[in-house]
Figure 1 (cartoon, rainbow, N blue to C red):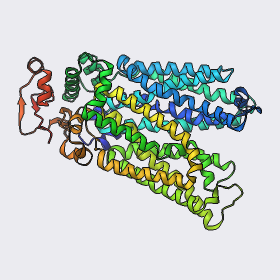
Figure 2 (figure 1 turned 60 degrees about the vertical axis):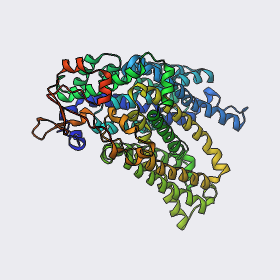
Figure 3 (figure 1 turned 135 degrees about the horizontal axis):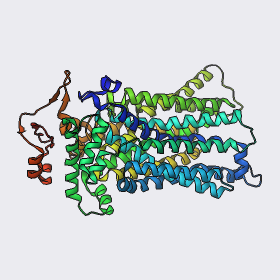
Figure 4 (figure 1 turned 180 degrees about the vertical axis):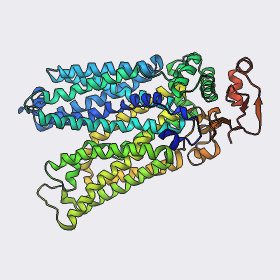
Length: 576
């Protein structure tokens, strides 16, 4: 019995579905997250190196301090700006070419962008290379979560998606160590100081491209393309079950049912219609508002900015000199560890809402302590002030709270902001909606990163973090009233949940609309034999041919049946 089957198989699904084929696909698409994290950790390090500064004019004595700061921020932010376009580009590419081919295209773009940067002779060429890299990185936040949510069994869907989120910190930690290793072992005045860390991107992209050929295309995308037979074969390979196994048949039929209903409603519609649907269809509009508000509340809680400006923020706690860089490296390890511990032991075991409650509460307490310290000891920021006695101990506590806030972030907002858009949206609008949401994510991240230095001046450091506490309080209220629990729910069962009145979805959605998809009725008994849970009424002796001939898409929609090829098929009761 595998680790995943033992700890996550709450629905007693066949143990074969937790297998090496699934793990490999999750690993390949999960590692995509490190593309974004690698650049976030890498760019600050190489901008501080003398060869890079000489090459691109960052040490130009004729430029003012403001001009040099603007140049640095432009170089660093170019990937974020490109990522906004990459998110929007991905919504077309993943539907047109599939998840696998789009990933391979991303790897090619990432390699091209890295080569342009390595060969740069001026800052304009560097901008171009980083913009192309950003177009690729922006697509990863659409491809990764979407693909993993579509192939992962619902029992571990949250875990798999959180692997992507945690990989961001792995990439950041990796780039920090590579920068540090280059500083130790390469000549300080050699261009290799920044070329080698940049070239590592080519290695990572190449390995991902090779690994993608070992993965299978998303069965849900195949059904959407009309390749239903192939989707069953592919799903059987991913699940390590025969194509005629009831679990495979029920899962494919759940996908078919959703796609058939969607096709009936959206035949011959344009991309513009999809955008209109995101706004005009009540249940989808609620999901979009939920996901977009999650991006605002999460980004403006300052957790992301704490990572970017950590060396400056630890100075507010009284840390001086090169120790600030040491503590910054530790933050990457702390976030990486807590992200994966949360993914394995919190997100799917406790559910999305409880994990978010815990994460926000931890982050809020830590941020409140840090803000209070800054209010009581405002002179800790001055380099000439040496904290002693109780003030010194309080400063150490404030430093610890920055790490604890990072732990709260990884357990709460960091996971949810990727999970909910990948899980909630219907298949017909999932890629478009996810792309818009993640473009909004990058826009808020860019704005928040740009705003924090100014807020520290205008609001004072203490006021800035009290503002963050207020945002976190709003986040708790938002989660209680508006966020439904979707852990363990099949992707095809979301529609009933979000068709409830808006004021019931967050507080009573799981109670009023349990998961009634066909796959939820298939269980693996302790003996290893298949057991199908039945409701009070059944549709008996149904066969593939008779169902295909007699049930139209409209009937499937109205009756809400899962078209499993079984002797007894559960008749799904209407949602309360």
